[in-house]
Length: 395
Ligand SMILES: *Cc1c(COP(=O)(O)O)cnc(C)c1O
Image (cartoon, rainbow, N blue to C red; front, side, top):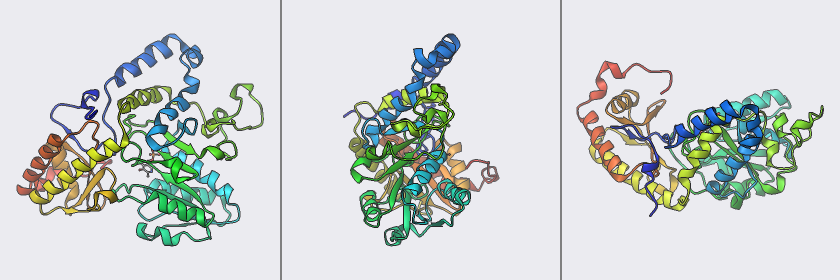
């Protein structure tokens, strides 16, 4: 048993962290790595570090470390930019692959930024594209031969409900549509076999379950047979076949590097690189098994101790990602009270208290302790305190 890897993380004393689905905990060594990059590579090597520290290949080297966690082969994952940008890249490239259709299909549970990016792109292209967002349970039926691209987030950020990647990808392909998976709440949370699904594109972020730190760059996967034919909409110089030839015309790299755009965030990428070391010797099936155990304990204990909270995630663990949500009318205040008492989760409007389970640095004792604290807050109605009512900018 190689879990837990708690000793590899720096968690503050007295905190039970149930928000690794939103911002992963800080891995030990992050400070040292960042410091080494800043003082040695940048401070001392200066611009030479692009070669001496091989900064230039860092985005794909890190991509190759993410690849096994999502079932992707080497050379199929690039990193950089934010997830919103990677969604844009994948969607723009996918639409070009099906030029005669005008429908983008997502679902109403998708993360707003993915939908906003689609709306913005539709406005930019201005060719009569339409975004359809049926209820998540109606997605399969909504995949018709009008659909150009199916763009779905596997694990719902609010409820943790999980889509069937195989069934949806097969349906998309059966009608001639291109498939994009957003793995924001999947990478490092649940086993994913992206290559086996045959989906054309996948994107995801690295500051959630992959612990890359706030603002860590996103990743994009392109199915290997398409690597040299996808047309990058964001034709930046770092995606050029020969960036330092300084040619006036864009010529995409003949590798996954064509999905790069501009200068990579080296310090942040280095921290992510360090964070990915925590996954060495860990299998995603082992993570999944541990995550289900933790979330089942959590649901059982919360339901027994806090009857006011109503489970807002699928009860069947096979239908859930690595998070559990409870609905409670005063959920915002209750979450503030919980955080004040050392249990950190988060809140999503209108009434969802959200808890993430990250077996790398969370064990059964943490979960039980969190439930005991939650029981006190609910039994004594501590959330009624006015100091928990004021909403911060980030919930
Ligand atoms: C977290 C998340 C995002 C955030 O995008 P950023 O550009 O990294 O801020 C986008 N989409 C989904 C599905 C997410 O879960």
